[in-house]
Image 1 (cartoon, rainbow, N blue to C red):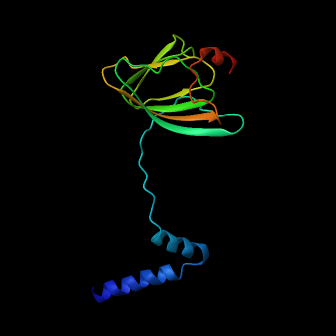
Image 2: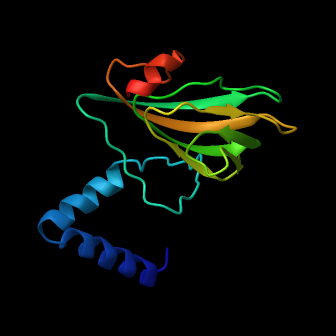
Image 3: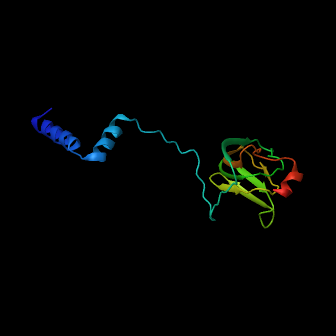
Length: 154
């Protein structure tokens, strides 16, 4: 190391040591603590605002769901809310919330499902549909209700 590099190293070390109060402590913690690893697994956009609200104690579940070609989620409803992103494939979503009762979500699209209405996701495409889904549900309730008679009272 040249003399100039040694001087610069001493100046840098002195600057760190003379940093005052919390900043000095944070600098020390930052050097000693490994940074978290962050891996983006899905991203999708929504044109409308998304409000997520569940009364009482709440559970949050995150799932990867794969629907094979020709497969379906089956008709069901939710007690809470679901926010998902289509990782791959095309999901045909049948629900009364769409003007014509059906909407197709493609890879990179996000979807939001509310509580109480009956709907079904189908894979009518040529490859598996992979969904990454977060459920926000009243604690102790199933993530999906398949007894459709219970869906009307939610």
